[in-house]
Image (cartoon, rainbow, N blue to C red; front, side):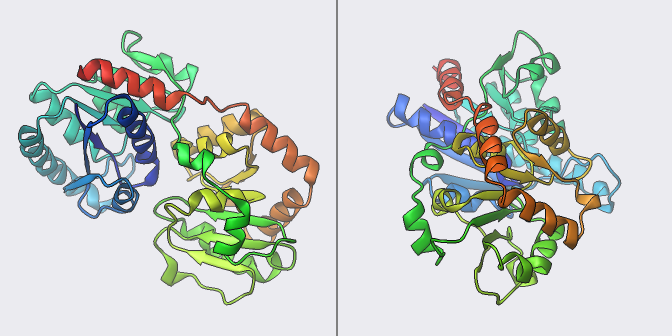
Length: 355
């Protein structure tokens, strides 16, 4: 069986694809994969590389719901990406296309439709993405993370599966190894800061501004998301990285508290690992609904980006990190939201469609 995976622009639309690919490999030895992402390939090419998977980049226009001067050029990029996808898919002749959203997947799935190649799409977030709305019209099946999302799609196509997570994230992290790998101190609590695959300038700047105060009571592993050169600190107990791939399980293992965006990919990993988290969703995005839902379940602490400044950010981190009862409560409730067999369920759907 040959599968085309498509996503990119952010890590959130890529990680679920790789988790499902692992399950498909177990089900059918010799399954072949081609990943179609963006021309730039950031951050998806970095993630795909560790899977020894072929990668092909196409032109893609972002599907924005707000004014931007690039909106004038993006339709032409999407059309070009469509014809590039037609050429790739005609040559490869995959059995199924699988996507978890991301603007680059739209021309791929529509090109597949014209070539008679079935598509399965996965809706991670509580609110359907625009890319999934555009491709759900022609998708064979639509898998969803939450029961309430079933109402957003054709009931004959939609299936509740949960959100897939990579097995290595759950099983391969080691705290002692992490302490050596990241040069951490045993006696200090650790914060992992992750602003998403493309980084968050606001979160990065705020963290840098409070590093001198944070490092008085904790140590920090900071993932800047490709913007390392813009943010720096020479403080002890502060460790900065652009991205982590195979080291990510160890980073999670070391973390007593995670500060992150609220994409469902990272929220699923946190729920699998029972990690307490402060979430700062991208303003006016689907992440706000994710953050509200998880916080309503007692699973995360929700901070609005627009109301954050150095002092209240520092105060909230200190308040949560130094309250062991609060950390335990967050860990318990976020783990309750984890569905362990999501990747297997989706892989089984893809296998049946591609048979």
